[in-house]
Image (cartoon, rainbow, N blue to C red; front, side, top):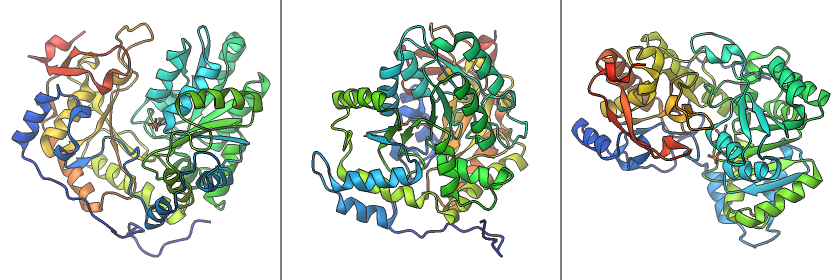
Length: 468
Ligand SMILES: *Cc1c(COP(=O)(O)O)cnc(C)c1O
């Protein structure tokens, strides 16, 4: 049940326990830093960043109880009590039979797709996250995104823009069923704008999976935010405790991959969980190869303790109310200032529509990268391009515009206060006011895969060069 609050102000439901200083830099310093890293914000030193919204992954503040868990960590190689506390906490929300801890989400993806991927296969997802896509493609399989059409229109309001296109999934399975090892749904849909997936959609996806006898896996990184958005947006869930909504989502799947650096409030960690014993056996053998013995999976016992505790804190409704409200606070202020943003606001981040704001810059001149660099130069705010730099190459390496050019302002959990966010609003608004003066970029060097992490850029002499 949502407890009605008599006050307008939704406070941070925690107070500060220890602090980290922020170094305030000058714009000259930041311009030099941008040149030195080839206009790729991943290359910056974190001390050169004032407000770091690059990612919400592993960047949250841990609670006093999580730090207490760190002290309790037991470092036995096999069968540590910390593992069993972790296992209980995971199965409390996700009652899958086999739970394999891993060092972070992509390791779960690697193990899973090494086991089920391969040339000629195709893996459908509402939208693959970048590491998921890379791990699918690395095995030679095709990573196919099947979001609903509404999910690709930044300014269109729809409560569940993260939903999968169920009809498209059914036709894929009809045509190429034999090539599909499993179906994946990402909750919330990170690359699609932090947008939630409804229970109704999950149920419909599961029905199609059943019809074609395919397992359904959740990429469940932001399950608690997704559950809160179901509770507040989907009819019939208003009164249901968030933990029960999570268990209902889990009951519709055969397995999951997870990054504990997201909703579980860990600084590291993740897991792969599933019911199929034969597949679990294969995954465990792959896990031992690169992650570690299956009761620690590349994590220290203390990390398992922090995750176990975080799992109980992230489904707390006061926390989720504050979390989702604080995202909307940022988004609503930017929308009111006329900055094009993805609406409605989802979990974990506000996404700026860079293609909309920088309509004079061709998608192949990377408007998202341009905007993210401008935010850094203006006020030391680090964000992340989610657009043509990240997704602008097909499996054969050919360049093409991504469906959207977004800039993600990801909000670390329990880390920044409202005045930090007010500062971000001011920085974005100032950049938006001089948007037409920004120039496109060209890539001067890039790796074969996952180029957004290491590619280098240079501003174009004029915007005409970036055209067609
Ligand atoms: C972060 C993330 C991953 C990968 O997890 P890591 O812990 O960064 O390896 C996978 N899927 C989604 C949706 C994510 O947000």
